Length: 389
Image (cartoon, rainbow, N blue to C red; front, side, top):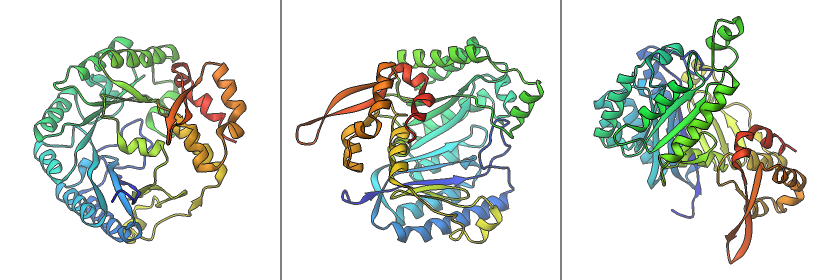
């Protein structure tokens, strides 16, 4: 099995109880019948796609949304059983599922764990009920505590908690309370994803901001929250391994690391995107069309040019604290990284935004790794834009 090519699987469940006020993802509320029909279509796509990837092994599976926990647990069990039966799933495969604290029960969690889900990602966002209401979340802090406790009792030993900063009405002290409350959980989460609120055009929060009726923390306060996240999580033993992600040793999200390292992945479900052997493609976003023909809704493929592959290698790989391998760049593209990006790298090293350190690879060959510095992480968008040829 080790000589097989790798293929990550992503399943999109595009439904939720109520859309959050900041959300611009492909998701919407739906009735039970629609969700059930969708899960049947997703199962058909999963089974019909398997034959095309018989020569791939699957190291990770991620079930995201939307809110996957709104689907009937029986449908999720069938989906996971199908994956185990039809795909070459690694024995130690990481299988993650996102859940909303307001939509999951202890019985659901126990059944999901028995069905093979071994990593849970719980969307908390804030430990303050007022802040949760301000962004349209359907749950409270107490409901999160119940869900977290049930997850642990169900057997989950690898749990991520999502939190957000720069929320409407949030203060630095309030954000600190969220961090402290999450870290005081017993046992504390193995992984924390910490994001700053982004007001996306077309969302209710964006419209309120444009109207002048929404008060959010200013840039300085947002910056202070960002610094606080880094300081407190480092003190508590969490390693920042990617721009917005922190983990205890050995609990980095393997699936997401695969995205940043450009590992092939297959997206299944409405609007799901894929990258397989340097070809990008995605499913259409029309629900009626997907339900009618889940295997026939793929949109136009994009075969990535060598230049696009180089660009992605750089700006995705640099998201990770470990950076990118110069030796791997040469191996993939047949040219030294300094031939393509020498001036950009030199400039950013001089500016203190990138650092290069030696790395031993292969038969004693000494190569280097290029990574963002702490200052570079703060200005990551600026740095990464320079690697677009």
